[in-house]
Length: 100
Image 1 (cartoon, helix red, strand yellow):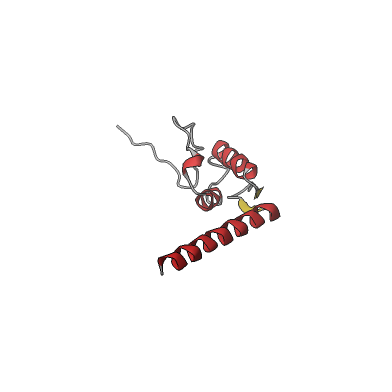
Image 2 (tube, rainbow, N blue to C red):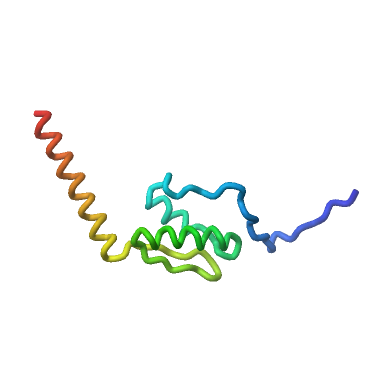
């Protein structure tokens, strides 16, 4: 029996996965990081799916062609994230003052 040699320079595209990743179970920063690591040459379907998901949630997505793409919050999304952080900070300040 002769073992078939494979070149390390060639990579196969990922076949369809039996169950898709449920993006709703992940935090947005985690999904952005995931998108920025996915290479569309090897996982084109997953890249497109994740790009669509992030775009629907207010991110500006630049898809890569020869490597991973990038995702950044749109101006509206950035404003939303800042407001959410301010509301969280106010709630924490209120909790601290009530605890005294």
